[in-house]
Picture: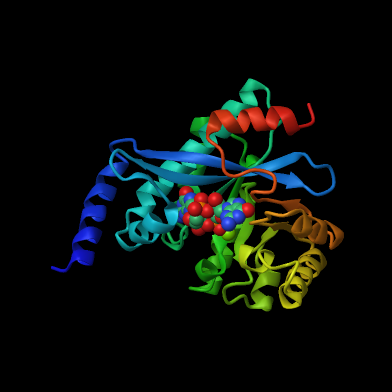
Length: 264
Ligand code: C2E
Ligand code: MG
Ligand code: MG
């Protein structure tokens, strides 16, 4: 076996044990209202704290977890932990805001997903409106009719639904119209060169206008600079997420950030 295959196998062996060994953590990145500058939500982002490898980024293990089917059990853990933590903050007296959780295609295809989420909300005591699911366009396009039925079920439960990395996949506008979603997240690849690339600026502006015309909220991710922020605010982008305000934070850091930034 060549070196690369061995390294992958070693990672796979570790990944299969990580959940049982309690090596996953969630970090939380604040989402800020353009209008008020206050925290209006957060995104939960998984971290793998490996005893030897150190912090492994999701980009290097989520695709493997998807391939191995492990993403379903890891995803269950993420959903439960995100709901538990968000409810705990509410009990502590932080103003209630939704927590966004990323969902892989494999999770979305589970027929029992609504039941699972219902059970987690019951167990953690979190109201459905404080859980938002982030889905990508590639997840949607596998079977449009099945997608719409699943989205309608999740929406009827009272959850919030967002399309992540919007603009990078194949979005059919006629489906977009029929999907009961609440929010578009402009992908960071369009945000990165907003100030210097007129084409990216045009795409971001178009997504904001289209989203608003379809009565959707629009959030930009990967916002790092004041120039990007000013552009997005001027164009009416509702919410901002990115290093400009904060990187993803551990739970205790997040509550400190919120205490300094939220309307209380
Ligand atoms: P995503 O959902 O699009 O998350 C946004 C990514 O951008 C995060 O990377 C975040 O840390 C990073 N980011 C935030 N602000 C900035 C910024 O200003 N500049 C730059 N350059 N990056 C920024 P992260 O945490 O490494 O996650 C990468 C991807 O892994 C996520 O992309 C998501 O697709 C996936 N992922 C993370 N957590 C989960 C999870 O719990 N479940 C699933 N299925 N996927 C997850
Ligand atoms: Mg996301
Ligand atoms: Mg994204």
